[in-house]
Length: 314
Image (cartoon, rainbow, N blue to C red; front, top):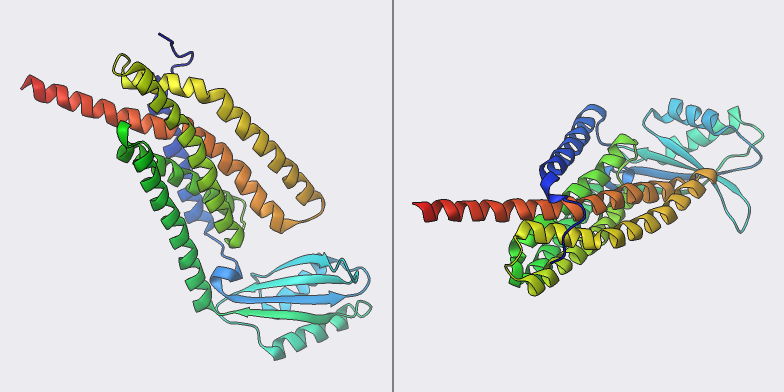
C-alpha cells in the first residue's frame, strides 16, 4: 500500500492557526486604515483633462486638491491615436462635480500652468445611490458564485460526503476572498471593478485546485475503500497532487508577476491593481486547497468518528 511522503494532516491545526492569524491581521488593518472605495461604488466624478507639453503631475494634483479638496487622485495618460496627453481626475464623494467648479478649475490650471493649455475632455458623474447599488449587485454575484460552487461540489462528490466537502471548500474560498480584500486594504487600493473581477477570478481558480485534490481523494476511496483511515487517505491524495498544484500556481503567478513589473514600469495602475491581488490570491488558493479545505474535512470526519465511538461505548 502506497504511503504519503509528507504528513501534512498531522500539522493541520497549525495551518488553521496561520489562516486565522492572516484573517485577524486583515480585519485589524481594515479597522486601522479603513477601506477606500472608488467612485464606482462610492459615487463622485471622473474628469478627463487634456494638456500640451510637459507638466509636473504632483504639482497639478496639489493644485486640484487646493481647488476641490483632498481625497482625489490624478493619473496621467495619453491618446495613442492623436498623441494628446491627458489627466484623469478621480473625485470620490457624496456629491458630483458641478459645471461651474470645472470651469473654475480649468481657469486656475491655465493660470498657474500657462503654457500647457488645459482643456476639459470628458466628465462622468456617478450618483452615490447608484454606486452603492452597483456594489451590492457585485457582492450578490460573488455570493451566488459561492452557492453554486457549493452545490456543484456537493453533487460531484456526493458518494464521499459531498455536502461536507462542499462546505469546507467554500470556507477555503472565503479565506481566499478575504486575502484578496486584504491586499486592497493594505496596499491602499480603492475598491473598484478590479476588486470584483479579482474576487471572481480567484473563486474559479481556487475551486479548480480544490476539485483536483477532491478528485484524487475520491479515486483513492474507490481503490482503497476503508482499508486506509480517512486522514491518511487525504494526506496521500495531497502528496499525489502536490507537484501538479505547485507547478500550476508557480507558472501562473510568474506570468502575473511579469504583468505587475510591466505595469509598474509603464505606470499602468489599473492593470497593476488587478494583477497584484491575483498573484497573492492564487498563492492563497494553493495554500487553502492543499491544507485548509482538506484539513477542515479531516477534522470533521475525525470528530464524527470519535463521537460515534463514544456513543457505542455507552
